[in-house]
Image 1 (spheres, rainbow, N blue to C red):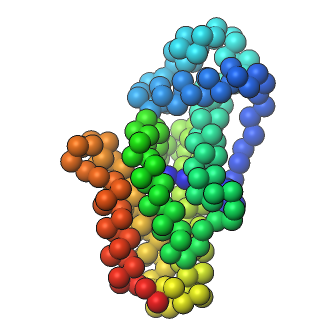
Image 2 (cartoon, rainbow, N blue to C red):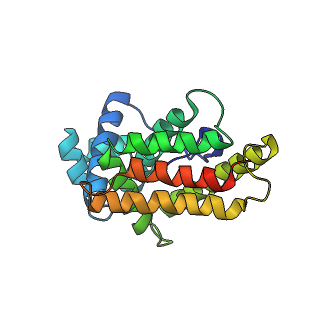
Length: 207
């Protein structure tokens, strides 16, 4: 689950050859989702991309740099979807945008798998995605905190709504639903469950 561009912190990767780069990122996304960072080799990505290992390393100097590019591309796509080319949605509109992104992710199991697997692996401080995961959650917390506080200022959300609890519970629900959906896709509907959660949230804290 990503955040609007305003709440993201980017790191740069110097690459060339956009077509080969894009293909490598797509292949790496699939392999990282299936086998994780540790279980994916540069050789496997290169072979499936149709490049030599040296050719792949010309675009991405290390496996960690390739992972960074994968995560940044995921953030870019989701951030653009959340904002629709405008500013970040605030108030209850932020929760509507999240519901739409959850529905979109239900059609992209490989990306959901990528996030769930890497988020678990990257709790280790030495993991190459550790800093990204910390930035991801920091950005998500800041965005949703701004969204709830703006909603309170507008009168959409009750003034006594516990901002931190609403924000952290929302993030926990999304993360939990993603994991349960990956385990039981025929029994768990991320979309329906998250929509029900937001309806309950609105019923309790509408201004």
